[in-house]
Image 1 (cartoon, rainbow, N blue to C red):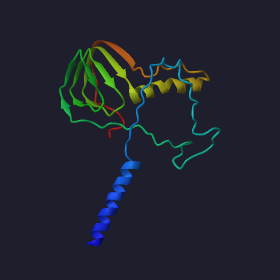
Image 2 (image 1 turned 180 degrees about the horizontal axis):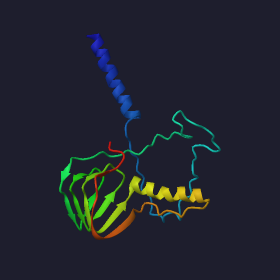
Image 3 (image 1 turned 135 degrees about the vertical axis):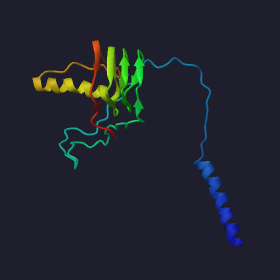
Image 4 (image 1 turned 135 degrees about the horizontal axis):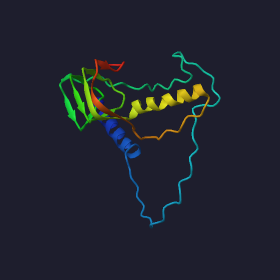
Length: 179
């Protein structure tokens, strides 16, 4: 019985000490209203390193471990008809789908279209990884030409429009990564 008493006493003391020193305590002071500061001081940018010359086992100069994740395909659909509305392409697995005057939204996920039909004004709205990829391509062209690339507009989707005079039916089409 003395072992149980000793264990219970140790537990109670540990609980008391833990609540005093490790607990969540809030202290509040009333202050007179004051005007907000003019502008916060600029925080210096912290760099991972400078003048680095390194190669990791993967072949990257610096291994950040942040590869984009490609969302996989959803359940297959048959004869989806989008007329004048918007359709997200990420994860779309569709046979005989029709897109009439539609806005197609794409962020970089897997897409599989079998025998799709497009007509009217088709808008493609790219954001996320898809927009980053499209923005990277002019950089590569500018480097090859020895020029400075045009600046990109951050956090804005890239919108491309195609006005189709006649219906266009494609053969099967899919993105290269289908995770």
